[in-house]
Length: 210
Image (cartoon, rainbow, N blue to C red):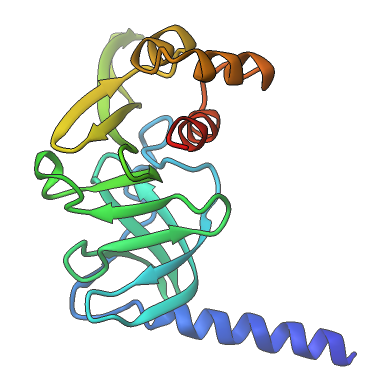
């Protein structure tokens, strides 16, 4: 019983802390606004636990967030529903699951949107952006014209070295062409890396920078 009470108290505390996100620059959103559109503009299937950093230095733990690639913003669950987080007020959102984080105005090319930062080293930074658009098509059904809509999400990966920004594909051949050192090639072979996921690219960059 005591364990149950403690767990319940912790969940309530986390929920109340998350509720602090609602502020002058966090606007409520309608969670049913996409109900007639197939697919989802969200980056994650499930909402993710995160630590939210405010521009004034305050930190909010145990927030539940998701990235809306259509609106290009972070959204959070709060007591009364959902809110959109202003990047100016909440410029960094650290995900618990893999320590990647979303940063607002990370690069001049992405001044008004969040980028997901996967790796920051002495020489290289590896990050991604995801955008979504609504595809429309019309069909005739018993003499009626029906418009069908669906979300199409696209993630683009980038490698930043100094001021040089380069879009990259998560392909072993392409990445090894950028890092042709024999030690790098040997590492990829020994670790049986395909370099087709952000997680594997991070492992590779951690080795390549050492």
